[in-house]
Image 1: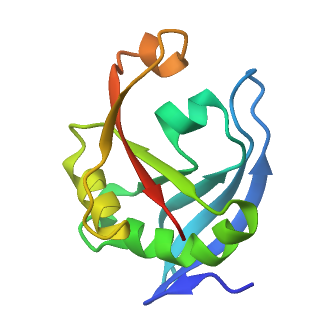
Image 2: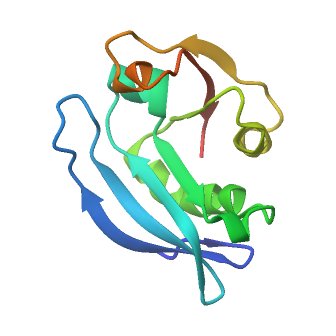
Amino acid sequence: MALHEEGVALHFSKIVTPKSRGLAPYYHFRILAGSRDVGHINLRVGDSEHVHRVVGHVGYGIRKRHRGHRYALLACRALAPFARTVTPEVILTCDPANHASRHTLERLVGGESGEEVSVPRRDPHYRRGARTKLRFRWVP
């Protein structure tokens, strides 16, 4: 299955099985813009509280020097055909203060605002200081 969107291609790298209990396994892809590796995107598998309230099914990171080109949005769109084979609905989350990620997710879901949800006290992200997340629902 070719995963690409408007000049961005996803290259499957590996399947990761976390060692910590309660964390979801995920498919890890490199995001390529032409021949440049501009970041990564992960598709988590599972419907745990950690996925639904804190990290979402999709996580991505764009290298600093490549930010501002909508690579995260294009990578999410490129991931859509594969995501549909895993789950009919994808949960996406971001920190409320991360405006770039918030705008990416709002564009992806058609302009809808995310729902603010609390991070459970027992979640590792709570121990790192996260108290709320914005949660979006996406049908890829």
